[in-house]
Amino acid sequence: KNDKYKLGLHKSRETLGNLKKLLEEKKTIDEDLFDELEEILIMADIGIDTVLSFMADLRKEIDVKSIKEPKELQEIIVDEMFNLYLQDEVVIADLDYKEKEVNVYLFVGVNGVGKTTSIGKLAYQLKKEGKKVLMVAGDTFRAGAIEQLNVWATRAGVDIFKKEPGSDPSSVIFDAIVKAKKEHYDVVLADTAGRLQNKVNLMKELEKMHRVIKKELPDQPSETLLVIDATTGQNGLKQAEVFKEATDVTGVILTKLDGTAKGGIVLAIRHLFKLPIKYIGLGEKIEDLVLFDIEDYIYGLFS
Ligand code: GDP
Image (cartoon, rainbow, N blue to C red):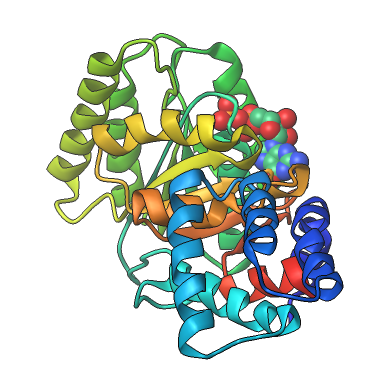
């Protein structure tokens, strides 16, 4: 089992750990217990809607299996969490990758959620796997963003394509892809601007990026990854929704899970967005990005 999860989720273990305690201390399954359970799940940021459907399923299971002891509930709860997350899909959803092609991964999300950091961490992993990686500084609105990405490129030991601040982001992506094709890069990791102030502009910009990518590489981007900060909770999900509406998101990278007690957000994302979580961030260091695995995750929370 993956101890990285257990360590990284230490804060969430405190909230959801109360659940275990509650089930051990309670003598009977009654409305009181249901109320307390509900409260713990809401505290863990699973989201009201998700909690309500979760509780309804739980009551049904208790009935069907004629469960009498609170102790027996723990296994049922863990099973319900699996079911809620899986929705008939594979447990681990790695990034779509094709050999001998330029694979473009576009990163979208609000400023500050951890896009640059996640690009840096992923670049480091891909490079270790022997892949030729090109980072693209597609957030041209902030000079700081370009500089920051440059720092991560050096750290990860990969190349970066950048232009002057203020350049048209689509032209940056376009030129980067021409270079990637010519020089046989395996992966292009493209940063984008996360300004939410103007939704129409944001949509137009992301659409244009998709268009210029497709012009050079018709099958790309193979992933558009929505980066979400776990510490911003339900509010962060509202902001993330704008990006989901603006572009064809294929998966989520959930950052800063080490910094929150609200690890239930994983289930809220699944319930709300119906998107697979591909990677999670469990710290600020370059190796702190791990492939998401719901089994390791639930084990990390409860064991
Ligand atoms: P961007 O504006 O979306 O590109 O965000 P950045 O990549 O610059 O990250 C913003 C802050 O979040 C930085 O201080 C990062 O160190 C921090 N950060 C990013 N990912 C994680 C994570 O998984 N865990 C923790 N603890 N901090 C993170």
